[in-house]
Image (cartoon, rainbow, N blue to C red):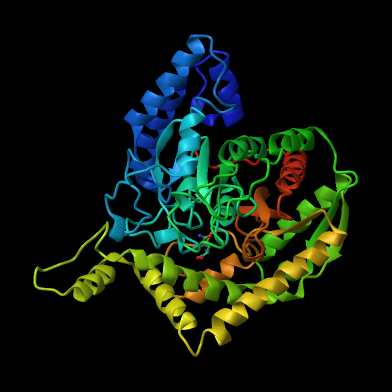
Amino acid sequence: MSTDLTRLDASELASKIHSREVSSVEVTQAHIDRIGQADGALHAFLHVAGEQALVAAKEVDSAIAAGDEPVSALAGVPIALKDIFATTDMPTTCASKILEDWVSPYDATLTTKLREAGIPILGKTNMDEFAMGSSTENSAYGPTRNPWDTTRIPGGSGGGSAAALASYQAPLAIGTDTGGSIRQPAAVTATVGTKPTYGTVSRFGLVACASSLDQGGPCGRTVLDTALLHEVIAGYDPRDSTSVDEPVRPVVEAARQGASGDLKGVRVGVVKELRSDSYQRGVIASFDAAVAQLTALGAEVVEVSCPNFEYALASYYLILPSEVSSNLARFDAMRYGLRVDDGDMSAEQVMAATRAAGFGKEVKRRIMIGTYALSSGYYDAYYGSALKVRTLIARDFDAAYEKADVLVSPTSPFTPWKLGEKVDDPLAMYLSDLCTLPTNLAGHCAMSVPSGVSADDGLPVGLQIMAPALADERLYRVGAAYEAARGPIASPVS
Ligand code: GLN
């Protein structure tokens, strides 16, 4: 009887491919077949690139057959890429009509790193338009569904990547996290996702949402797989002006250490402001059980207070729209993408008609809020105040990290809700980002690791682990130790 290759972890697949027990072509083909079988009901992918993936797989197989060392620890293991990273051989749409069928003339640095690491790209995954949203319902191409319950959202904006992992359509995936778009989808699909320290994964070729917050990052079904991918994609890039010129953090070593060890000597801070009675009861129960498990592993658990986190949502939803209004000005119908022009229009009319037709409701809402917040007369009151709050949040973190090595909270206050439930209530949607936003505002790193299912509805809950800038390895040590202690979570996905 042959094993179903789609059920194996990326690290297992890598060792089987590198020892020639299976080929990368077989592994890649198994995932392409799985996409064909499962994705009709889920819509995790906007574009599937089976042929190109098989070409990349074959190259890895030939090199291994010729006796070469694998080009990376994940060589031959295929991946799903969020449709916000530029790729020369398939479209990059950001799930927007304004970029329908658009193909980039260059690869993102992250795309290049995947190719150089011998990682076949299965296709591009669905997302909220230009990464604005928490449910993937803002995709111009229709929503993605949660593999745990197809009447529910898979999180957002990276719902496609998380759903691809949770439904075994890909063993690895890439997301971006501006306010939680890697971590919240991970939480609601029982997968793992990390927002690395700002500046440590190149933004070159990552279509900008809010440049001071955007960060690409790794997603997997296990902490170790996520760490292996983290090391592939991180690193200084002179083509990104905010890239940090520091060595890649030793996250794989930390994950291995965590999985086989205890947490003696590790100080874990529970953030008082991120554990509220207004959260879903089952989420709080799962979180408390996770904290008890960390204590049992030998961690020293303390409570910390970050009073300014209360204003994170208000600050984020001014800073993000302000940057969005500026970044999305590039979609002017002149250079690339959609162009609506009846032949009789002035340049201004073409721009207005194109943007009216090309952007969805949420994107327009944020462009308007941002334009307003940046307008003269309101700049100091809105954008200026938001920046001050951002500084206060960073100070809260600094004080908390004097008492703790990592901080923890639930990743999201709720389990995945029903499709359609929050689409007409933006504020309700924004509230799902409550726990993830502070990390982005501070430029720090954080991970979501599954903490089981909620007792009230049987749906996934995520534990968020946060660490200071350039201490990403702490996330992996604590995450891997917790994952090993927690044990496997039975997935209903067949
Ligand atoms: N849900 C948040 C938002 O709508 C975060 C998005 C993201 O991280 N890209 O802005």
